[in-house]
Length: 460
Ligand SMILES: [Zn+2]
Image 1 (tube, rainbow, N blue to C red):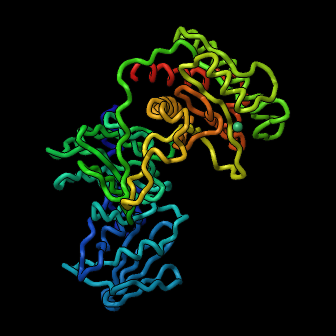
Image 2: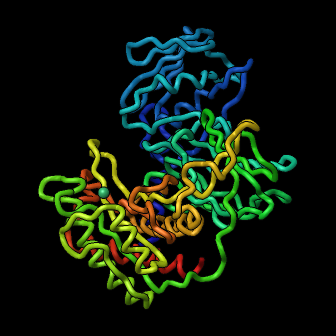
């Protein structure tokens, strides 16, 4: 019985994909990429592939050399030998004429940009790296990276639509992480070229993005991100790349001894911090600190002190002084954000910068004169490892998007210990606000932050 039903189902799927005069229902065929061929320097797509990707039926009128594609929600007419396409009643000018090759019309790929974007069919984009046209998710596609080795430079080319918005958020040799906005649409290859600086490459889930995690050879000295049309190129080199960033010195290995953690709930007293309706940052940071303290005590077996345990104002000097007097091994300043845009959300960690851009000219100022040479900067490398451990965990558990910002946060000025300022969510974002306003949400947030601190303390 089951087998008969299955056979019927398969049969109906096959039939559904085949008819010539009725628009077929979208099937796997509509998502299989179509090859792009170069004709006289113009990327072209075959009309049969175009019809398949649009789930359109085709009508050919040989007398006028016209092909009508009837998609579920629009009609497209192409005429052989002319650089025009008619979309419903609108005429679109193409960069070159529609031509016939081997009995099939070839259409300039540029046509795709003119197709309706808000329609039922998939959004079609030209993947210039893979040389295909593919159906792309709304948030943009991210393809499998191609790794190339040339001399001392290893390039990782990631096909994607929003390369300019990609960001590196972990930059160690053992774990180099880059986030590329969009959705991964193909499986990663299972081999890497020999002799390159990339030893391992995997994709991790991230919010509205793909996080690629790389393991790099210790010989990699510098890296840079080169965003381009349709692709992001990551370059790793055994020497200093112009405009690149040098790798941070490796953090001291081995577990961090944590005897004393100071939690610094932001704001207080007259300073409410960010406000949204009845919710005030000063109350939320205190409530979170009070949940995080016992969690850290229990899981790490260390002492935890709060810079304030009630609603009072403190100066930055008083906060730092308290942390230094307690001989803190770690300081976490807790804050939340609010932005005018309701779309801003997620978690941001601020740490003292641990790397610097390569000097562009020989006249660049030496490191010793850079203004961030502050007390906390000497802890910058381990602070950043901590920030990455905490935000990485928060992102995996759905609190993203996350960012690690390398700029000395005011909340750590004068602090003589590794530390980070954590903006734990955005009050103006409904999803974040719901979490921050509920006792369960705060408890979960505290538990995740403690997980991150624990991971950092163990792994170094
Ligand atoms: Zn704040």
